[in-house]
Length: 375
Image (cartoon, rainbow, N blue to C red; front, side, top):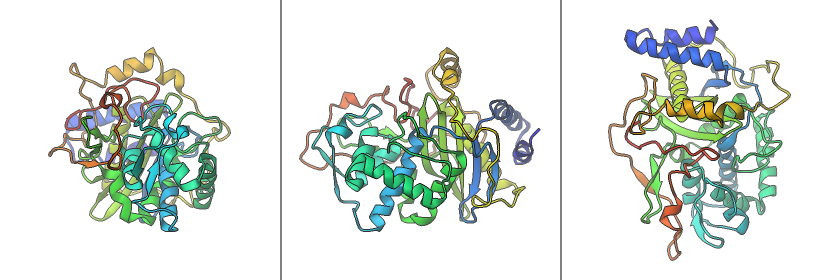
């Protein structure tokens, strides 16, 4: 058994035999699927766990972390402010779901746009953000790639700001950890954007919950972003803070919302409760593995009858999510929804447009929204 899995089992010793058995099943699944992941200490940059960290992968909506980082850099440079109006262009409004269905010419503040992009993963708002900062979408993407190179994301390339499928768009678990750590280190004043329970548009539409199942359910969880397209599977960058120590995990290519939450929780728990077995940092970790020349595509496993069956098994008879990690618990208080919508005086989109089938970053596959206070 790989050393990474041994360390994960060591973290489970204080828990019951039943919990350990559940986690053992989870770990076996992780080994069998051999999906990329990495766990990093934010303050030191130390890599605590990793597997296939340099394998090229489609980032899906995790792309929006790079988008938001580029926007934060523009705020820092004085180019834009949180109260700056963001106008929807025809190009932005034409983006595929998930989206907010805002009309060309309608405006929202940058603050609202950031909340919508990070919680709902709205592709139309992501493009509107890009155009507001870069002038055009293409100019903004050029800035994204320049920022990625400056950060040392040597195995990443972006072709759009929202993560929709596109030739030439790829990243790695290691590179995603780099931008996640940079966001936490360089912009601590904006950490709250990544930890929202959800938002309301101030209309008759239902509140939009965060698809990150760790928020409010894993001790110390405080971010960051989820992502999905058929080719990538279910991805997640998660962060948690305990006793002043923040860890970030990146999990790529799982087969359901529940699986990405389970794996993220198990990694973070192991990081908080066991000593690291390596002195590697994000900067010193050397590229490895035979899969650095082509981007993995797992569409056949995800968007297929096989994938649908797996996802159906992660829900009970009334549709509630069934997570298996012993470290994820039900929310102990009602979710707090912040406002994120159009500026005053504008006609909102029809409330029925923001529907369960348009569930954030799960474009391409109709998957029900998780309930905000249960699984």
